Length: 359
Image (cartoon, rainbow, N blue to C red; front, side, top):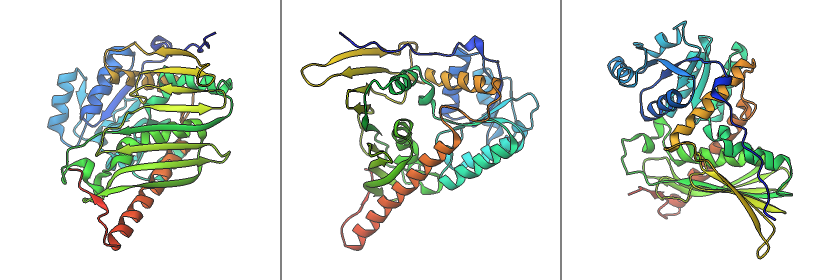
């Protein structure tokens, strides 16, 4: 008899308050976020700002946003704005988040929350002192497939969980002046892609007690790829891979003594869940597919509905992804980068090529 999956608990957009949002940044992710909100929620981007006032004005006109401010400082001072969405490059997440927090706004910061655990702790401390809601935009946590997974784990459907596997990698064209290849602006695979599988492992196993990593650096000084083994306090393991020089499957699995959960590609976006119970030769499966959207990034709307519901409840952090957990994941990234860079230095010191150009 096939197992039965619990129903996905999806927030009704009409059940949460319609907040007025201001977006800092006018790149591709802000565009996709704006389109998702306007198509699938009652949330609205009312204002936008960036480093270049002309580009912000053109962006606002194209997407039907009410107004463009001349600067991020002007946007966070706008009394009509309830929530600020920080969609700028990684290197300015800390600066923009602290700016919005100081203005008393709620904040959604695009992943990664910051460049390091130290910067993440600074954001969390400022948010708590100000009493405003702040959340990392780890949108995977708010997808219905993640709700199904949480219910299955809470019910013990897999028995004792002992292994989590997840990966995210792609091929980025080599450009020594580009963001992905520049250490000054938070380049590298881990902060851009690796944060997803590391956060997924954290959502299942919690903070790691041991981190073992190997990988390679680029000639520009950022991490090109990494394979990471995480050991949780209870002994369970996670194996995570990331890369910006090779395309990985972008799948995830959770394995336990009674069965496993597989999340098809792309595991971090709206995809689905496959539950398999039993062992080889006697397996029973059940699956659920998220077929709500035509395009993947329309799923960004789920995190906006979740944020609005949390603000309505008077929360200052996400119960599904607290700030301390986001900071812990950044700490894992810090350590993985340290290990990979150390291995690279040792290889070069021994006269062995240790860096990859990515071309």
